[in-house]
Amino acid sequence: MKARAPMIAAWLALLLPAFLLGGALIGQYGFGLYPCEMCFWQRWPHWAALGLGALAVLSVRRVPRLAIGMAGLAGVAIAISGLIGGFHAGVEYGWWQGITGCAASMPSGASTDDVLDSIMAAPLVRCDAPQWTLGGISMAGYNFILSLAGAASIFLLIRRRKTGSIAA
Image (cartoon, rainbow, N blue to C red):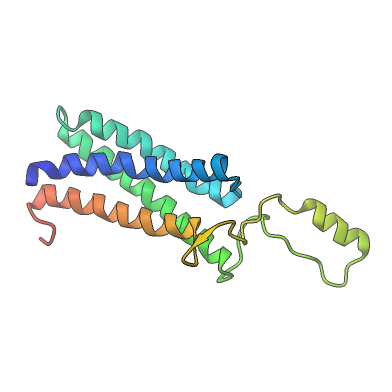
């Protein structure tokens, strides 16, 4: 089983970002769930992980050390996307304020012109209001859960390759 760990890690590093990006793109183009600014932030690390995962899969039989390195870097990129997703989910749940201007806010005690300017400057898709949830968890929340679990799995498989067991 020890020899299979690098192959599994490489395939996971390729398939996880492919499925997560595929889900996001199906949501966007198939169901009209247009991404906000923070949604795009979560996609960039997955695109990087997709390329790194492809390199890992292509090199796993011929250059296993390169494959493990690429899978590890893909795992880091996947984890980064998951952390961005966790931050985004926190903004959606109102746990903290987002760092972008993608949340609508009305100035208190402002004139009609100020309110109108605020409405016109508001983004088309807000980062603080999820467009879709399942079981109370938004797409950003699922990205957080799946990305961190997947990255942890990749790192455990890489560790397994080195030690022969996961719990060493």
